[in-house]
Length: 424
Image (tube, rainbow, N blue to C red; front, side):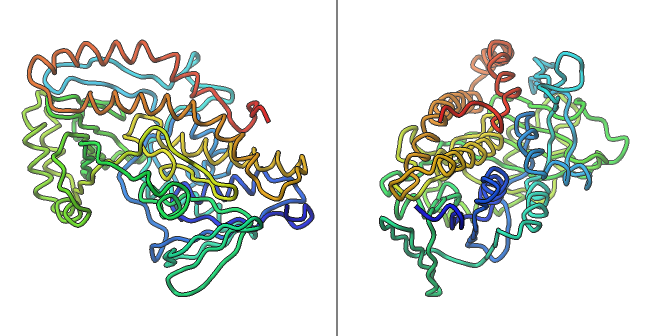
């Protein structure tokens, strides 16, 4: 084991939200005299994120508050706070609401939080601002990993430019196409296409532009679901994002070509949602800018997350279709792993590797991820193509499902994994 006096040398592959928040959590929860030295390596030339706007649920905001990123979001007016998520039938009326108001209207949990719809880019900016304050964290971009070797004492990373780095621990936060997983931890566990695509853009709107929602609406149609949502306090832009069934293109290059054709994506959305009885749906699709389409991949439910010195986090370990809490689940990963590693250090366990901490983490996380995975399969079924009768069934099932699962969702919204019992 590395000297308790010196702390750990930790390498993180992946400079997206998962990698950056992992570094912050490891710093925040480390024993005071054991702050780790963390090196983050990102393959892209600068930190970036792919995707539109995400909903940060109360548990996600609670963790970001602990990591000091939520304060940055508020200070910069990033995102739009959400009281409730409204659910509509694309052809008739409102079906249901999912509220974040809590009992007294102030939010859920103690202290209370509501939800925040924020662009992925703004969320990344907030986390980066906090990261740059940390003297123990280094972020290096433009580094492509070509080799991972693990010994009894350390992990050795080789990059395409010939540079070599050593660490006590390697954390793979490098997404669904994770090099950490595919080259080292579980090479046989490859991503598969779900049959579902996400298409998104941002529609500029005037102050008097009429919409049918307070902040965020899910609009269910026969051939998919369209999310329409404000994402900034000015409410001068609406995020337009669809989940829909699309035939597999068959290659990453093919998906890039199709995904980059904004007008073809717009035409596809108009064909699926343009016949809506909700007046604003068609003009929002017509006005949306920079439309992009990307396939949703998933990993099998079971698989290896770790070796003796390497651990996968976020999509690298358990990528799944969007199911309402995806971003919050990643933040939970980072905090719980950081707490398990801190406890392992405090115990001063012999043996020279952190496998015991990894096992404690997996014991906590795998049941939670298994539940989320099953929920994600419901999402696939709900947004898949259906005829008139099948859609009619959806309009009855969706409100019932939201009512039936309300207790389950609020249980996780209230949970604070920064203080909860980790059983270790």
